[in-house]
Length: 182
Image (cartoon, rainbow, N blue to C red; front, top):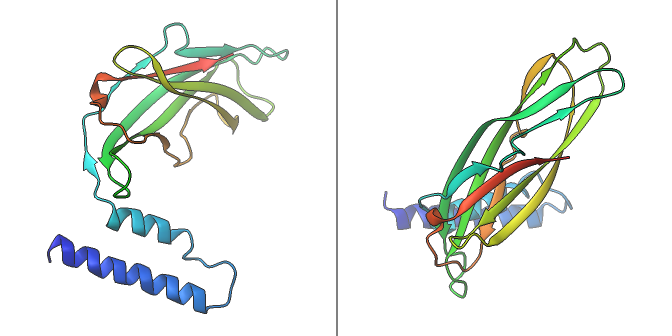
């Protein structure tokens, strides 16, 4: 099956889902969340591109917490995966580029955990262009329940997306910086 026939079939499916959801009379539909995803995956041509370098901010690559109860723990970046792609969403827009980051953290406690409670930390992501100018920066707060003496904490299946609209530059010359904040 050619790509055009596949797109037409999926567009037909997309249209059918919209019609069914409109005729159902319900205000919420289980397909409402799928429609934009189906549309994006079928109607937008994504092209994988070379990604920028990902680096840790010196001195901010780990963070240590000391609590009153002597419950000392340290958080490190455990694993960072990334994927980059470009696409044209509309004919009126230029070329958009995306960087998807999947980050895991490692939490180590010095003492055995006796009281299980909610913990929190913050981290920052910055994107620098080839002139080392900050293009995008975002702060994220992460809340978790301490459950073990050492654990790997993922981002609960949520990808952090950096979107660059109407960008014609080669982003492989950019740099993504990651660091913890106190």
